[in-house]
Image (cartoon, rainbow, N blue to C red; front, side, top):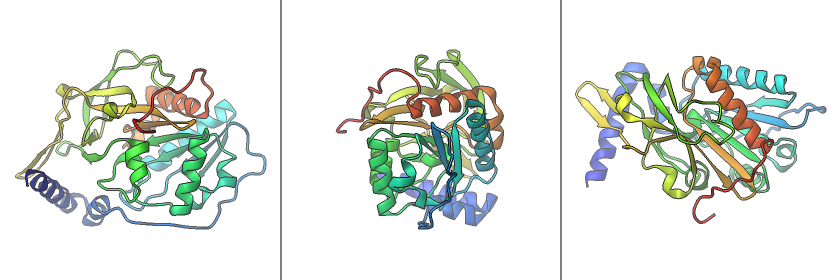
Length: 294
């Protein structure tokens, strides 16, 4: 009963949020839908190798400003590194032939159910056979998922909400792993502002490699709107960036990156760059952290 009450309060809170920021956006956030397509995107015949695919389709909440900012940042990184690059919102790109042309797929603020069963099988097979997946912010921010494998075995964590009033807060990130390529450029702590996600439980127990976690004493992990208040604290173990292996492939999720300005931050851009390089398999060393049962 207590769990049901908490869920009801959470839903009511986010519905009230719709009054403040637009009922349509709030409804889509609470009820991510389905949007499939089957038209294949046109890829360059001379796509450089290694290559990055950026996918940013949405069927739920859409980060209107962060998506183009993220694409621009990732394109600049690819151009500077001499990597192949293609950005698309066509879910049909998740087919064996086209996925085979890429070394890493970046899901940039994806929301909702945006690829069909055949496309899901193609993506899963590609990843397990050695591909790399990088999920950014909204790609782990749905309240529910149509695809159990995605949330249980790829993300490894279920989103439950983010603070409001204020939505964006300065907080301290604790750099737990300074050996991983994505975070070895960081100092032991990193102070920045973002929309801080909370999850039903820490993915650490599932076997992921936690790279960054939040110091909850440095911000207010609470949803507040009028008389409604929902606690989002996870305690001392509040991972915000983590990685793990999926078969012979690599996966990394970062909850950073709600605002467009995040993609101009030098340290965040460096994290993205090295995460992508790691996903491509460009850094030496085997991927050893696996989710239990995989």
